[in-house]
Each structure stands twice: as C-alpha cells, then as structure tokens.
Length: 353
Image (cartoon, rainbow, N blue to C red):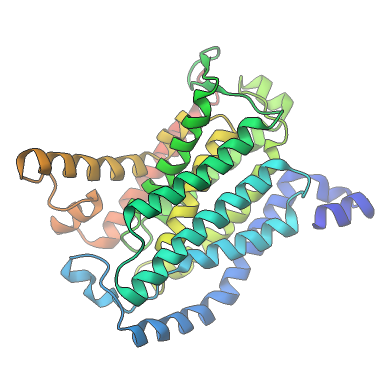
C-alpha cells in the first residue's frame, strides 16, 4: 500500500527499492509482535486454564507445559498480513498467492488448535490432509496458468540441467506445498525448535527470491529469471520479522507455542516460495532438518508395522534425543546450528554451477 502511495503518487524514490521495503517489513512485523504478544498470551493462558489445558505429548518433562498457550501461529499470520499489506506491491501476483497460502493453511491450523483445546482432539488426519490438498491445488493452479510462469524443474549445482514436467508439474507443486507444510508441523515439538530452522530457511529464500527477480544477477549466477519474484523477498522479510517476534516469546522456556496455525502455514509458504523461485530441490537442502524429522516418523511407522519394534525411542527424532537424556535447549540449539550449515550449503549452489 505504502509503495503505491509514497512512490507512485508522491514519487518518494526510496520506496521503489525491494531491499528498503523488505527491511521496513521486517521491522514492522517484529515490533508489532512485541506489542501484541503479551496481551494475547495473557488472554490465551486464561482460556487454557479454564479449559483444563492439554498435554502435548507423552514425555514426563513436558507435563509442565500443558498450560502454556498455543495458537501463536495466528499472531505470526496477522503480523505478516499487516506488514505485507503495508510494504508489498499490490500489483504483484505472487504476493497474493502467498497471502492465500498463509491465510488458508493458517486458518486450517487454527481450527485444529482450537478443537484440541476444547475437545482434546483436533481435526482428523484425513480431513486435514484433504483441505491441505485443496488449498495447495488452488495455489498450484493459479501458478500453473500464470502466463509468466513455467513448468520447468531446475537442478542445483548444474548450469543446464533442467526438465519441463508439463502437466505433471501441477501435481508436483501440490506435493511440494503439502509435504513442506506437514514437515514443519512434525518438527514443531520443542521450545524454539521449528521456528529456528524456519527462520534460517526464510532468510535463505529471501536471497534466492531477490536474485531470481533481478535479470542481471540471475543471468550472472545462471539462475532462472522469474519476473516479479523479487517482490517475494519483501513478503519473506515480513515473515522473518514475525518469526523473530514469535521466537522472542517461544524461546526456552516458551511463553507460547506455535501450534498448527503456525507450522502448517509457514511450511506451506516455504514450499510455495521454493516453487515460485524454481528452487524446489534446494528446499530439501536448506530445509534438511524438516526432511529428517519427517523421515524419522515415516521410518518409525513403517518399521513398527513391519516388525512390531521401534528404531527410535520416540518419533519425531527430536523426542528420541530427549529420551536419550539430552537437554531440550541443547537439542534446539544444535539443530539451529545444523540448519545454518545446511543454509550455507544451499546458498553455495548460487556459485557452484
């Protein structure tokens, strides 16, 4: 909104720059979070106690968290939407797709969180998965029919290795969005665990989005030029600011949890951004923690059904480490470190081609 007001109508040249508006979007979302979180946490905690709280998992050392309010992801969504509407360009198609993904998946997660609080059981896995498919299909169809978009899958580390998937790319996009959404959801289980790798992934994709939207830089680095994708960096900076604001209150010991309202939406947004920037495979690198967490659950379930035994003491794998006696905050920080290393590897694909 302010871009159209201050640059297009009042010719304030500074606001045409993506980097400047991205910086302001980050600050807006961050400070807005600091203002509204204390009030919302207080209200949610009162509701949580009134409802009797709930136990998040089966670990004894998590019993004390039953009255810690969830649904922090709703506030992430609100601050991102407000900041994006202030600093993003309204004439950018990708911004509206990302807002749809954020709000739709966030709403699904909120309903699930609210049902868990009131009835101790959330939306069934089948219903949740069905709506994820529906929302992802809408976003994928919008991207697939967009005239300036293509169905080519690019491979990192290689200059000229790519394949046009044609109609199959539509189904591939749905898979990426839904898989990414569920992967972040499975990672959410310890104080600051999911938001840390998410912020690192968001930061990395902010760089990819900026470069992909710049004809000169994308040509120099042998990346596909995606007209308009640079504006995605402003949206991601708003998400980064909102995530930092959330981490302020979610760091150990957490005052509020993300809940499905945050994990489902953040994961879906990351998947959508990877598609927009044509870095779907890079997503598996920078989001390697999410991949490992998901694989640990798949392996555990498959192996248990096959043999009746467990490979991990508990899945997802972060609970396995807790069972081994590693302190929660040490697990979280070490996972952040691994995420930073994975992001560096992902960013190295910019030059190793």
